[in-house]
Amino acid sequence: MRRFWPEERSLHWLLAVTFLVLLATGLILYLPVFAELAADRRLWKSIHLGAAIGFWAGLVVLVAGDTGGSLRHTAAEVDRFDEDDVLWLRWAVTRRGDEPPQGRFNAGQKLNTAFVFGLMIVFSVSGLLMYLQETDASVRGRTSAILVHDIATWIAVPLILGHLYLVLVNASTRPSLRGMVLGSVRRDWARRHHPKWEADE
Image (cartoon, rainbow, N blue to C red; front, side, top):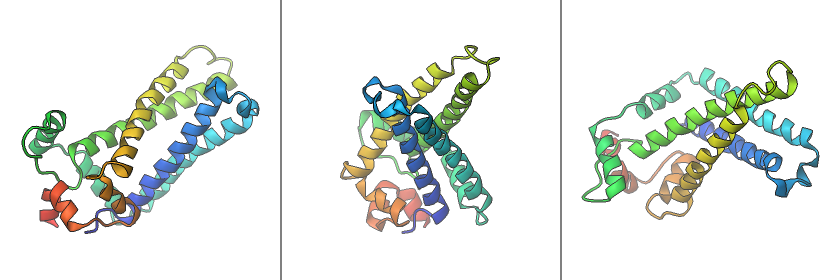
C-alpha cells in the first residue's frame, strides 16, 4: 500500500539530513572534547548556518511545488486528534488491552511531528538571536538564546533517538521504514498497526 508520496518523503529526508548536520556541527562547536576539531569555528558555524537555511529554503520549495496538495493533506491528518488517538496514548503508557485502531498516523507520530516542528521554530529563532548577538553589539547579552537553544537540543536528541530505535531496531515498527524509503508498506503490517487507514484505502 502506498503510504507516503514523494513530497512527503522529500520533506522527511530534508529534515533528517539537515538536522543531523546541525546536530553534528553544533556538538563540534559546543563540546570541549571537540576543541581541536572546532579550531576553525568559522567553518563549522558556516556549515551549521547553511544547514539551517537549507532546511527552510527546501521547505519553501517543497510547499510551493506541492501542487497535488499531499503536504497539506498530511498536515491536516497530523493536526486531527480523535477519541481513538486519546485512547491510543493511554494504551501506549499502560500497554493494557488491545491497541486502539489508528489511521495513517498514530497519536504518537502526530505528537512527535508537532514537537519536532515546534523545536525547529525554537531552534531557528534562538539561532537567529545568537547570530545577532555575535554580529550586532546592540543585541549582545540581551537574550537567553543560548540557553533556549541548548534546552531545545536536549529535548530533540531523545526524540530523535527514540525515532531511530522504532524504525531501525524495534521489530514491530521496523517495517515502517520501507514507507519512507520506497513509499509503500505491506498491507498486513498496515492492517495490524493502522487498521482505520488500511480499511479506508
